Amino acid sequence: MTVESTAARTPRRSAGSKAGTTGTTGTKRTRTTAKKDAGAEPQLVQLLTPEGKRVKNAEYDKYVAGITPEELRGLYRDMVLTRRFDAEATSLQRQGELGLWASLLGQEAAQIGSGRATREDDYVFPTYREHGVAWCRGVDPANLLGMFRGVNNGGWDPNSNNFQLYTIVIGSQTLHATGYAMGVAKDGADSAVIAYFGDGASSQGDVAESFTFSAVYNAPVVFFCQNNQWAISEPTEKQSRVPIYQRAQGFGFPGVRVDGNDVLGVLAVTRWALERARGGEGPTLVEAFTYRMGAHTTSDDPTRYRGDEERQAWEAKDPILRLRRYLEASNHADEGFFEELEAESEALGKRVREAVRAMPDPDHFAIFENAYADGHALVDEERAQFAAYQASFADEGGN
Image (cartoon, rainbow, N blue to C red; front, side):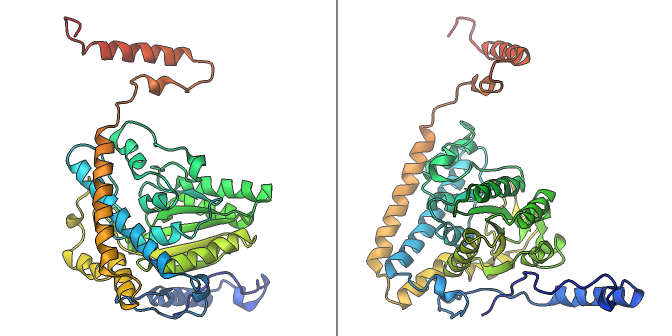
């Protein structure tokens, strides 16, 4: 299959040209064309079908041409272990060990494929759901859970793995990524930046501003949108009149839609986009078309706004099952490999569970530290009030 590039290639027409007029006839023609385009089937990059069959692609095959059976097994292992970790975190929340959890179930290929496409010196700006990308960047899965347990504000040093802390505010990380990428360009480095966001965040003004600045300053950034088709309970078609990847056209840089459940396709497209960025060609928008198999977070009930038949249709496109079929058909993995991986995944779940339950409670007064370099009278007052509040829970006997 081919991909539609939305980079603006049409020369600008002069203000007085016929095509540029704004008469009634021209307006009607524009609306008719827009309606027709909106109903057209978007083009999709796919290298691996849901049945596990390899699809040739003249434009993107070269980005995965050298991939070895060992690397394919590695991608499969990444997805299986990420899903196991995610399932354990969901169970821990249900048991009261975590306050909240945002599951990535169904989005493993989008995250592992893109995460493995990055270089060590690239910098990643995630949302709060990029557990698979964190895995690829070497962040300990247990460290991801501290914030959701309420014992820290993120359990890792962003500069150790070039992986920024999780961002809860929707869309703001795209601005952070754009600014960082502009700095990378000014420093003359050949590394790239990748910013993750969801289809819901694509409606935020921060994302539009990021597109504008990155295009104008030719920033080496890849905007990676995981379109899981539901912004909590709001479907994508109520947020955008056109496919999300086509929005890049209005800002003057390429947009690509890739099958987000195809780890090979995602790997290839993301490698291409990152190479563009490192080569000084500016930003790219990648839309990974996938599906959120579970709830938005553990506080959500997806049965209230979508039917079981939709989920069942996407279960047939499962990213892990897809790659397993390919591995088996190609004789790249035997039953022993899958059995060993199953044991490894169970060991990971046990380790994460024990690590969460062993997390120490935070210092109650740490919140007041580092607010001001030299202290502040109001902070001192609030600290004293909080200390009195904590003391009110002590037993009369001092126990």
